[in-house]
Length: 213
Picture 1 (cartoon, rainbow, N blue to C red):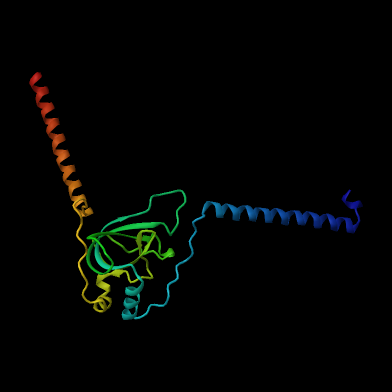
Picture 2: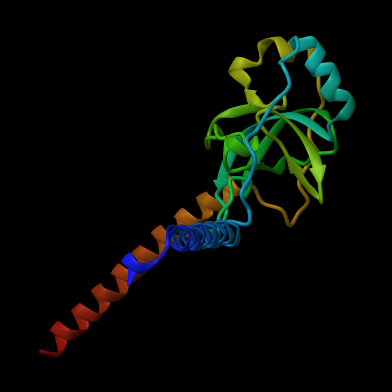
């Protein structure tokens, strides 16, 4: 039958088949794109910071526009909860034992948040036990910082600290507030006491069992 078709008919049939293939490819592309958008709705754009000014210029600028600037030791780093859909912009909570304050009304323990990845301008180098200078802005009731801010290890912030000069002490904690460090120590003590109590109970049970024999 194909041999009996005219050249124009053959050409029309081939064009039709080609258009069908193109349509199928386009539909597949739309489906894949839609799936990607649905599965990852939190996709974040790459972080871009302005060129770093001098230490003096940056310090003066951030003193004028930041909510808080302080130095403190990290006592705990809490990653965001694991979910099916994660984003580089999900917030990590960093708890600080505050030492010196230059701006803001901060207590001796303060929580600061940062994006979990530098792709969303998050500061990834917070480690428990290390001391940092931190500048942060209040966003929806949370202090947030990132790699474009003054935030860095105190050991690398000599010039910035000279420009800042003398700061002031943080506000004391109220009676009901306890530092995480103390909580951790109390938890360890509770575990030790609990283990000793368990061994004592086991010992009493064994002794009584032998007496009955």
